[in-house]
Image (cartoon, rainbow, N blue to C red; front, side, top):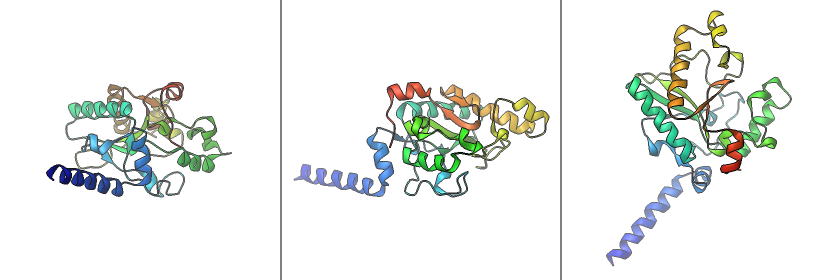
Length: 222
C-alpha cells in the first residue's frame, strides 16, 4: 500500500512538473538539453526574445522563459561562472539567449534576409547556428547591484560597434570607453575559461564548438 502511494505521489509530482513546462521546454529536455537555472541558480536568466525589444521587434519565444543548453555547453558555462566568481565574487553572468529552435531561427532570418544585417543571422537553409544545437549562449555580466556592466553597446545591437575584431580602433574613436573595453575582455576571459569561443561580430555571443563539429556530433532542434 505504501509503495503504491509512493508511486502515485511520484507520478503526480512528475506530471505537475511537466504541466508547468512549456511545450518548447519539454522538447528541449527530450533532446537531452538542460535548464541552466536548475544547474546554477546564481546565473541570471533574462531571455531577450521573450520581449519585442530585440533586433527583430518581435516576441520570438511565445512559450519559453527558461534557458536550455546541451550538457556539454552547460558544463562550460558553469566553469565560466565559477571563473568569474573567483575574480569578482559579487559579479554574475546573465544569459540573454541559449538553445534556440530552428523555427525561431527561421523567423529571425526572414527579418534580415536581403539586408546587410543578414551576416548576423545563420541561414536555416545552411544549418542555422550553434544556438540551434544548444551549443551557443548570449551572455554578459551583472555587477553587485544586478546591473549589466557597460559593454559599449546594448546586447543584440547589430553593427560594427558590437564587433570584437577592431576594439582598439573603437576605443581610439571613443565608441568604447576604457571601462567597456575592459569589461569585454573580462567577459571573454571567463568564457574562455569555460571552453567557449567568442563570435567576432557580437561581443555577447559565445560558441561551444565549430559548426562542423556541431553538425557531426550533435542534434539540431526543429
